[in-house]
Length: 608
Image (cartoon, rainbow, N blue to C red; front, side):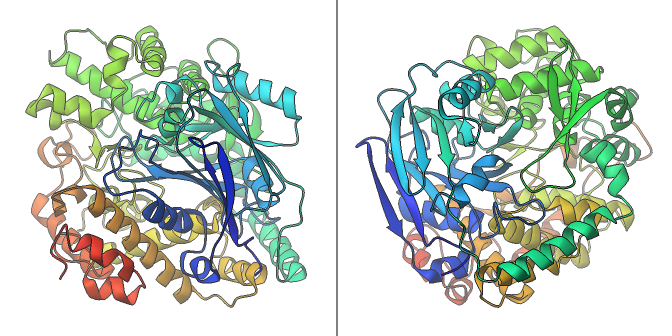
């Protein structure tokens, strides 16, 4: 078999034993790798009803068939688990040398179960694995711990690790690599911490199995050239995703004051134009020729890697109007190993709760010192920080009905940086995202503002399903970065061709679409399995977008129409082959070779 090693490494931290598990070729053809492989492994290996922070949860680090190979922006890998934030399926991807090394270490994935009594890290090298003491690393921030690991094992390694937020099981703790690469928003870092696992260190030097190296080389050279010849390439190199600050403000979708508004008069203080003037270097993932990691010197003169979502959530959403200060909070979050999007959302929620007198603490909008203190207190679960460490959903439930209406999350995952008062398609994208409110599954808002943004049309729903299948299905499972396509227009036709060259199996977009449908339905089955009393309300965006209209900007007075949204949701279900409650039809599960889920689901819900 080419393109995959055909095996995964299973590490049980309770027994301190490791073993190799060989997987059938059919598994790879049906799920591709990355997210698809992770979803199937979690279904098989995590018992129904498992507490996400118990030893029975599984932690998956998975490559796809294109991960870590010499082709555009391939240095990505998937991290996944049952989420302690949402209690459903949770994953994230991050660019890291760990992807490169895992591709050469002999495994398609590393799965960790059980829990150690004492802090440990796992060292993997060329078909071998060791469980080593991390007593001296526990308590270090991610920057310090990575330096210590590199000093011990050398620079030619991939390192995935947690900081104090993961150690203290903050529900939105992430996994960090290379001092600024972060992934696993639904609390994957907290699961790592619950297992007393400080780091996964990987070193690989074996030749990856590729069916047609010459064709891979030809296609890659062609694609790399196409990227640099794009009309948008030069501007992308200058600003990356940070250009979205100005775009979002112009289109009234910039999250402002806990998503209360879509415009901010001080947007220029955190803009891509300002970042461009302050930028001191660029960083990127392995095999990337359009690096998106723009680095500036922060408030205290240290380097911080910025992108749009981080800056919007830690800037306009909490009214922090100094890019260098935003950069410092962003860097501090990376050092602590806490998700910047959820951090900005929970602090924004706390600010609004304070403003309304729902909590006794006084937290002013834009108060830099308080924001900085809260970031540290959240990571160590100290004082008010312990409350914020639980995430917006749990915070709002603790404060009552009024607070629930301005709690900006879907299924427990805080919303990333797009206000959807005037964007019903993006609201639906958040509502139906496979991990909760995240933009990585579908950035339909760019399409929406170019067309009829207020439309609730079936065409928009069809576009959403297409985008999810490409972004959340194909890219998350290959696993490669979507930005060459999204930002500089690399032709999608390259990807089935690259997949064919690597695996030796002929792939078409129809094959990829079918695999994506299978992955989305399996993930939906996982959610239903883990949530008693599932219904379509789980796929609704926050009440604020329906009940609290904008008061500023060109669309003042606008809000979403709940009846029309509901109609869009029904259309979405129909396209997915799900019933009116968002439950996959029996026929859909059978058609997609997911019949193994039926005995479980029919004991929980009515399968139509």
